[in-house]
Image (cartoon, rainbow, N blue to C red; front, side, top):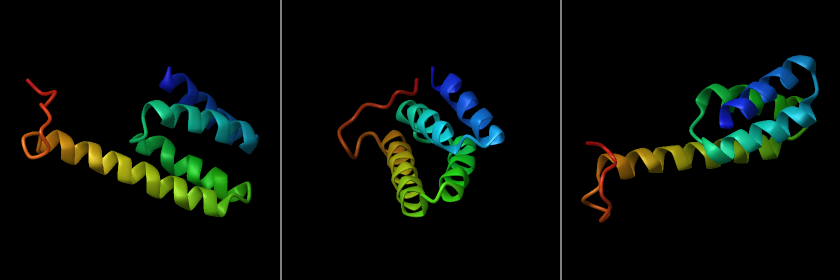
Length: 86
């Protein structure tokens, strides 16, 4: 499902419908916050729509979430979690 929202978001960006692009992009990022291929065009669309502060904060939040998930995956024993890798 996140892929559908991502495709829709990018299509709305291309069509210039930045409000719908924002809504679908945010929906996709709820599922996959680390989607770098969506974060950049979505941040650009948010800036074009006049949502500069929101674009900056969203980018920071999404990247922090992504980095933390990688760290937790790489060092499972330090934080008491089991790795998902086999």
